[in-house]
Length: 77
Length: 495
Image (tube, rainbow over all chains, first blue to last red; front, side, top):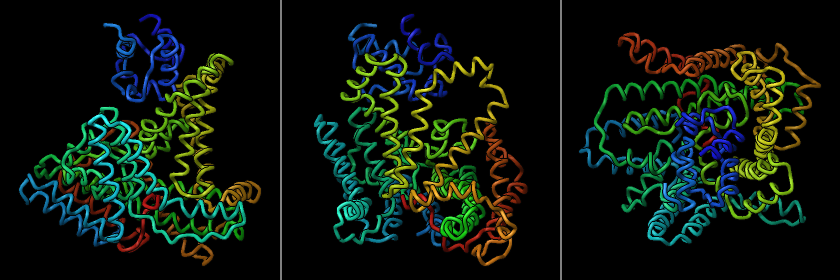
């Protein structure tokens, strides 16, 4: 999780990733930021993220992103 | 049947009244009937196009759900192929003739009503089914209503199956408050359209159509075009949302005070929102996450600085999206430049995001400061107005000449607000109508920007006050509206 927060901080530093659960709904992460995060996640965790995965539910919080990464890498949460 | 016509008002009144009189289980059938009546009023020959799109998308959705994924690209090719055939054939013929000196004959094609909007809505549905974001609709008639719902077919907003369809098929009970809210929204839409857009159009047409004989009025022309385009399109959407609201159907908003945007990216989050989100979900993400873009991204990250390597593929995808936006606006090169101009600015701001953040930090500029926000709004407004030159001009050359003359031959003479025949009927009264209308829109926009529910505040007032306000809006239409209630098409209906 700490590694993930680091990636998020690098892409978009001005956000409270520990507590915010509306990263997409409140426009804190725009489509540019989402794709930057996706490319980092794909490199870091060797996963494949498809357009079907790009829904607010998967990106609204650091926890949601973490869960998606776990799911896509086939690990149990 | 134009929205700005007595026929349309009567048509809508009968539709709304009947909707709440008939048994509720038939309400969606009633809407389907009126949607097809509206469509046929534009010409029975156009029925083929919407029926073709409906059948192809309906079957495509069912098969995609059964696991035949390859049917989706085929259905998309058929849907967009039909749109391309009627919209872009002559553009291609003209360019081939120009390039190779051939003399191919152009076709006599009329753009079927709403084809861009229902094609986009159909494509979104197919991809949503493919990506399991919604279930395929099994009833072909219900599906036909989703594609043809008459208020939105002309100029959107582009609906999504998961949000729109359940409302279309639901049973709705009559609600006087919702009816009143809808009527207020409709009156507001007509106010924007008739008092601002159709009056501003006089200036826009004269200035842009005579740019070579009357140079120097470009800034006035483009500012008037800002007013016209916003009032025309958002006014039309107000009417659409107002009618739907009366029926109990909540459509997605298509505008959110676009001229308060602080960047071009922000502008596209506030202007034609449903097109922007459609492009993002169904073009931008699929391109960005495609295999070849992924390989290009990996190559960039390996060879370049980390931040640039990460941003470059996204910028490229973004430029491709705005190329599509430009082509969607119309079959002409100046629209393509319009799209690319927007794409290039957004791409540049993405690439420069980090240095920009650092520069702001070094200069102690806070995003929250009022002065900086005003600067950002004015800068964005100027960049948007530059794009309008390409949007409204008939050619790239005209746009460039007008931009040059706007500066080098700047003029704003008193004849602008006189009854001079050169200005095609424009006069001080017309000029003041636009200014008055925009002042009212500005006041309302400021309230909305402060998260105040303007319509809600009006509707909570006592009945006499509400009646006087609605009467004042209608009086404005009668006294200040440019056209009689029988003419006046909408700009975006042509897209």
